Amino acid sequence: MRILGEGLVPVSQLQLYLSASEARKLVSELQGLLVDAEASEHFHLFSEDGGAELSCSIVTEAKLGGVGYTRQERDAFRRWKPKS
Image (cartoon, rainbow, N blue to C red):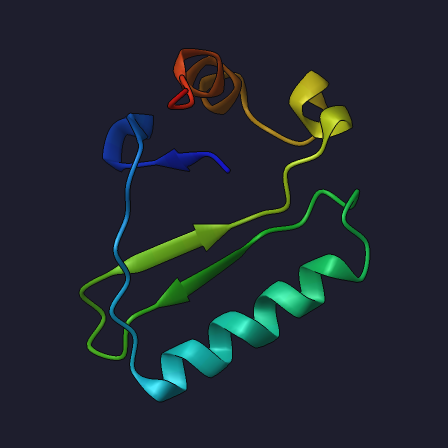
């Protein structure tokens, strides 16, 4: 799991507080991505009040190799350090 905040800064912890409607949309969109995990697809989930946005994609080795992410995203992923 890689979590990037504003400015593509790696974040190690995230808390989501979703309405039931937002949670259903998130699950539905994630299921759609899993149909073809190698596809260069992503989605944006916007809060009901428009004050927040969540972007999601499926991470694969091929995409990390340069196929599915921008240079800025790959640079941020390289800076990401998992907790040991």
